[in-house]
Length: 343
View (cartoon, rainbow, N blue to C red):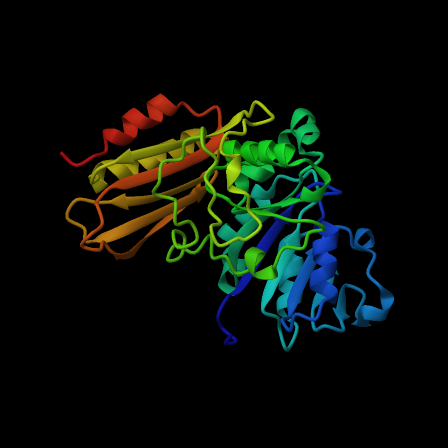
């Protein structure tokens, strides 16, 4: 990686007990040959073995596997800037959020702040979920649902502690909250680091490569499995029904070629008015008289889009847009989206 290319940042969410600490400890101690910087909210919680710490300048601890670890003291941006001043930098940054935190403001920091954005780029939001305790979490906490809704990757951990039927129901619940995330079932947070890091989920050039089913229909009746390459998936869980009546829902819109003069004012208006309710949005738009696919994505009210690549000859010029959020008026979104189509 050259000195000027932005460092990818992964935001890690999940409740206490979901396996975040296990995962972070693996990154800070395993011999994986890569250098990660891990920013934690509470260094004490991780309980790092002192034999693994090579040197410390109080704020930043260097590990003997080449990684570094530091605590968020106050301002996340300041912490990141402190890390970026270190010589012989690292390949990626992982930011752990506290169990109760809404990941959106953390993601927005990397999505928005110009100084941070010049040096780093938001790579993906990863949610660790405890398969055994998720049903309880969803009953008593809105944050648990938001963390799943917001994630690009969901690590469904402690899968060995539930029955196959319970696991299928938990997975169906995750799907109902977030139809586009990739799901990995794990025990003891033993997910391969490649599945979590360098996903490019916020990279407009790669946003759809990671989600080959993005253009499929996202019906909640059948739990789509995005991880066909993942050997420990059991494909017999299509019939499982979610364990929880979700308040977060996804609205999947489909249309033909759009009129750019109608579409852009519409998406601006929707995100301004519905922003607090929209956790994530992702779309691929075909514009009339434009040979390129236009990819768009957003977090709350912040939205960005760019031309991706030319449409291939065998591709149907159709537009797709998925909103994930609360209290979304699906019918109104559908009608107003269709009204942006080119005449």
